[in-house]
Length: 248
Image (cartoon, rainbow, N blue to C red; front, top):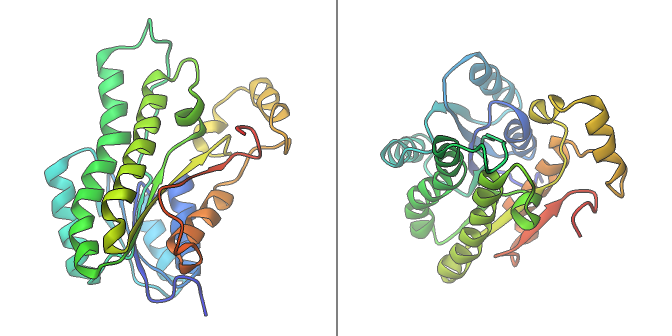
């Protein structure tokens, strides 16, 4: 039997990158997938088709995860379409990297709203259904820079550190109702975002990693499958770093 057979997951920011890798891995394990992204564009349609081809129910929804009321409406729509929520993967995120002395208020607010407020928005909306079910797994995408910080990423690091505090609080708050909450903290993962880093800088970064390479979105997705499945039924309030021992 597949690990997520018959389950339904919501995955935010899943038209590309790590979010899409998680959606595909979930579908391969028998999970129905409702996913969101900012626009209902070609990427969303292609992802929807790719997931449906794996024999599960899949549907993309255009939604701004940083908007509270919009999130509440889209989650209600998903529950109406799918009937339940077994896993919520809060993956939507952006970067606006610059040194603190150059960082604008807008760059700070945008990153906090998209990365951190979105986690509050979706968790608050999805918990209503999970509380009725008395079950559910909340998986929040943090980052190693949320654990250790990074120069030039004060806004991003703060948002990802906030996710960790939120994750642990929710685990304590909702545990008595059978709802688990965990965070994944990826390290240097090869995606469209990291592909923009100059070759020499990328090689230097990879050299500093004990496993001597960047990770893949699929390797992060494997941990998400574990956290969404019954294999992790007694794992809650934890931060799992996926970083090749870069952050120990």
